[in-house]
Image 1 (tube, rainbow, N blue to C red):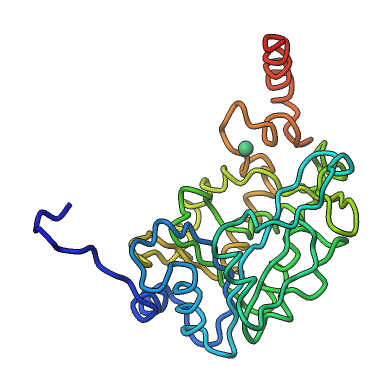
Image 2: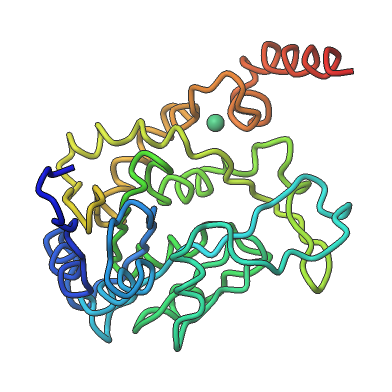
Length: 285
Ligand SMILES: [Zn+2]
C-alpha cells in the first residue's frame, strides 16, 4: 500500500522488462534458459508470459535463443497409467507460452522436454529424446556459451538446472531406486526414464558458493527478484562441490522421499525415513 489514493502499481511492459533483463547481463546473441514464477512479476501489460518471452527475445535478438523447460510429471511405474499425459506442461506458464510461440522448437523427450525459440533453438533440442538424459540440453547450452536466468522463482523453485546436468554427468541421476521405474504414458506408449533428476529444493545451498565465486548477477525483473549467470560459470562452481559430496544438493526435509528414501548415495537416511513411512501407512489403516 503506498497510501496515495487512486495510485496504481507500476505497469511493466515488454520495453521495461527488456531493460531489466539487459541489466541482468543478457544481450544480443545470448542463448538463455529461463525459468520464472510469473505471478511474482506484478502487473504486466499484455499478459505476463507473453511479455516476458517477448522481452527476452528482444534482448537476445534473432541470433540468440530463449528456452524453457516444458516438463510433464513422471510417476512411478508408468505402465499402470491408464491414459496418456497430453495436458498443459507442469513447469509453468512460461513453458506453455514458449511451446506455443511461432517457430518454437520442442525436444522429443517424453517428460523433460525443452521448448526453444531463436537462432540456437535447433541446436539446443537436438538429440534430446527418450534415450537421452533429462537435462541433456544443458550440455548444448554449455557448448553454445549460454546463460540461465531465474525470474521470481529464486526461493519457490530454487537453483539452476545446471546442477541436474552435473548430477547426471557424475552418474548420480541413475543412482535412485526409481530410475527405470518412473515415467509417464505418452500417446505412443509407456515411457520409463533411466535417470530421475528428482528433488531440487536443496539447490538453494549453492547460492552462497555462486556469490563467493562472483558469477551471479541479481536484480529486478518486473516486481520479481531475478538471478542470472553463465552456464559454464555455474558448472565450474557446482561440479567440485557435488563430486566431493554427492549429498550436498539434497534438501533438508526429513519427509522428502527422493532425498531421504530413494537415492542410493544417501543410504544413511533410509532406515529413519522408511520406518517413519511404514509407521504412517500402518496408522492410516
Ligand atoms: Zn528433497
